[in-house]
Length: 380
Picture 1 (cartoon, rainbow, N blue to C red):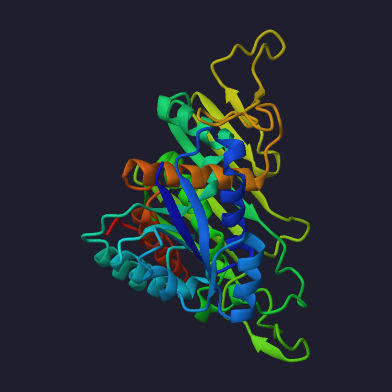
Picture 2: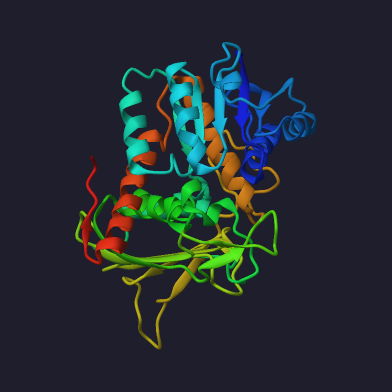
């Protein structure tokens, strides 16, 4: 089996998640899609790069992304940097025909996404977005049921992504709270929620949205005694009408006190309904409206499907198909999908085209907030 060399750009929280995926992949999949090893890691400072190199046993620690994207020895590039740093690294990796695994969002703005779209003409590698919420067995089962028409006519949806990391006025102004770094919940949580709806129900037609900044100033990250302005939203509410005509609501927030990482999805149809709760991701709740409701309710009611960790082969079933599932396991499944596509010489799914599409949805949401009206999304 050919061995692939991997370089990771950025080794904060999400870079560590990607590295963890490689370390644990052989436990969860047999055979693994391909042999790969992280040989290079890049961060903004030599000392943090060296620390990362030591942590994951890489060969080289670098502080210039081009030492990875332009390195002929590197086959696969992971982009795990802050949003505003994605574009140049992506363009370089595309030019050098690297396989690319890019964390969401694709880039910081729609203009940058369109630059990536033009650059992809002639690209021969495999590229995929890290949209791991698609890869819970419960969500995979939900998609099967929707595609089978089990819901009947889809009538409406609602999706909430609730976090509390910005609820306190003492929370520092990290890069995710600054527009110049591509911050805000539209860019941070938005790709996950918009992708889930699009994946399950189809493209958006129009959106109507509004947002909120809870505190116009926050303590500087490097000096808590100094206050700095906040110009990226803490929460967003969206009404989204799909091309099918279905209307639903989406909420993404980091000021939901008491919530940590709470993803909730409901889809209602004429013959049934689905419900997924990310804090209980080992099950999918279904409601069959065709079931008899007599006598005294008959057999009609919500039923929990025990999806657990029941991934299809070549998943090993480790630690057990019946075990509850964690957030990181969905990342491992997403990575396995990418590596399988690399091995087969196929496009990634979801590919960078989906990242570009999500950028169009986010841009439409931003325009709606500014214009205070419905805005069309389009596919470009």
